[in-house]
Image (cartoon, rainbow, N blue to C red):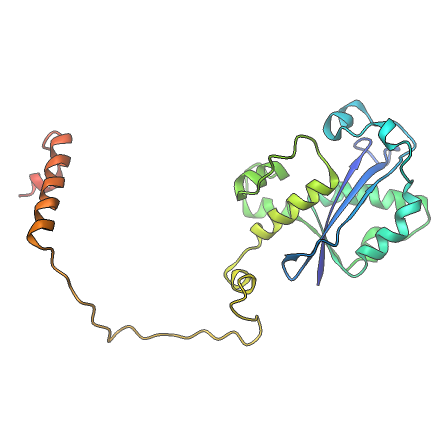
Length: 233
């Protein structure tokens, strides 16, 4: 199944209050491999961004003035996501805005056009209960480089989310498949009996024994002659 990591930037926090989408970023993953078949749109929302939102994404009204409106890209977007699993961090936020844009055009809700929607915020809360699970926090926890994220950007955030998701879902079977070691079908697990295996015992020579004793003396000296081996001998 194709997996699409999706993120949006908006003029504010409430689609019901008239805020609109100004950027959509999508990153495609197929068989746990990034394909490079991504989508990115800047959109003219027909209104100003709230100051708080502008501080988050930095996308000005002047920059968006010559960009297309949502209705101009909706066919391309919906054809792209059709038949895919859509993966979003804090899905209700992005879905609320996408559904509002689609409703204004008399189109079906977003979930009706895709296979499923997965919320990585819910996944992270189950895996890391009681911890911060923002995208930045997950990047730090999972070793994903987010040093280029001075401001929020839909395509950059979708790319980071893809890396986070791969790390969140990485298991032994996934590692084997990624390394090309075997196919998922027909995987054989070979059990080896080690009970009859005789391991050789190699004794330390005089030089190694002397070096070991010297190390113990140095440790004993550093501990004020209170080491366990001195007390029990």
